[in-house]
Length: 312
Image (tube, rainbow, N blue to C red; front, side):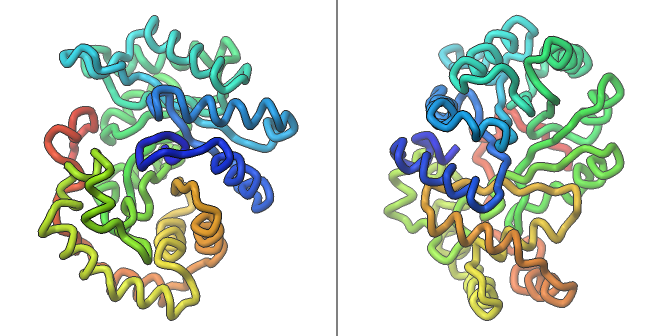
């Protein structure tokens, strides 16, 4: 998402620098989507692969489809086979690849049974267009229903020290089924970093400006509440974002955090966190600094809640 305009303008040079650094550091998983910059993120990645063809065998590419262009307010999501086929083909073209390693349903369309959607995705595997598939923001029961039709490679949802709802069922279901849990926003959209977005920065980002956690007084309260966590990270020789990544990885072998950045220094700090390896005592100290329920405000506004399945 950071390779699009979601958090502000991004240049091709910034994208290429991050992808170069990823290869240098052994970070091989890229997660994008058709709606990130209305194809812009995929085009940036495709341009990089075109200039660096040897990188294709290194990177494991994930993308997502199923969200409409939102011109029709009555149809925000479309999981019908014809629409998903069109979305997938467009993503393949923008990325300049013959196969996407992991393809997600970005948001579930309740008008199409998930078993039917899973059959469509399994068909894409048979055609050689994708290597595996996953779902984003679905419930444990939906995951089990899909998995009964075909093994689901990955389930993606928000998970961090500030969003721990997945611990109420989906993490356990993924472990039970052998499905990788992919944690997006693992640094809490900046709240779990050393430089959380302030009021002025938030106002320039439409999503955050309307997000309960970034609206006052919640924003100031959240920044203050995380002060002890930032101090703990410094004591451990990590940035706060690096410690947030270390915590996420310590919560389960089947958990893969996908932080986003366009800043090389931030990227290196995230990698340092991934390489750290928390002890049991350090894990306990982190959770004491930010105990369950410390955050002020819901993770989404009512409008932003359109799509994710609530199950707890």
